Length: 233
Image 1: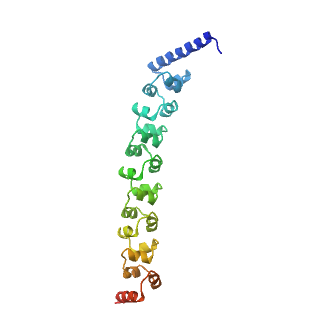
Image 2: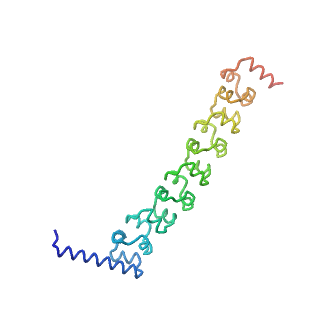
Image 3: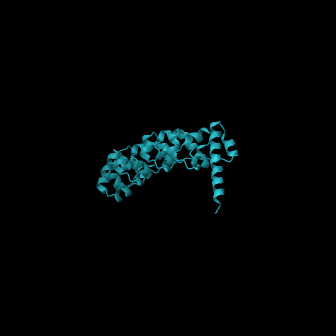
């Protein structure tokens, strides 16, 4: 253990350095000058300098974050969302201090980054993100369904009938969203499902269903004969 005199001398030296740092900051010293004199942002923070003082002295967001200042402290000191994002703060940390989705988008965050940061599909949609943006950033149809998207919206955004079906939407909702019988058939729905959803025998024939498919779907020969006669008349 060091001698009492040596410990006191070391404390005196640190106190002297602290006073020197305060004087240098007050005199307008730059970050590079402070660093050249051996002062780190962590030392200055531990010696009581505020975020605002260190920011005014030229320390960056990343330096302040490395020194232990929280995103909340940085926001309270006046840093903008753009500065914090550019300084390496995560979407989740910016979300935690209640920056809006629109402000994060303006700062340069992508839809994918916002999703990874914890924002839901419904929140992103409410903020004005289009289904095309959500689709292009990897949102599945299931996620979009859970976010409240309707079938007609998904179709307008270019999603296939089969992907919409696989996400759990009913044939009724897909049919009544304006999909043709041919699209429903190509999307994997069976003849019996199409019939139960309200598709007529004629519409099934027009969609390309064969007599064998219709028979397998439960239609009788007499039903088919009658409809085919109507089709040819």
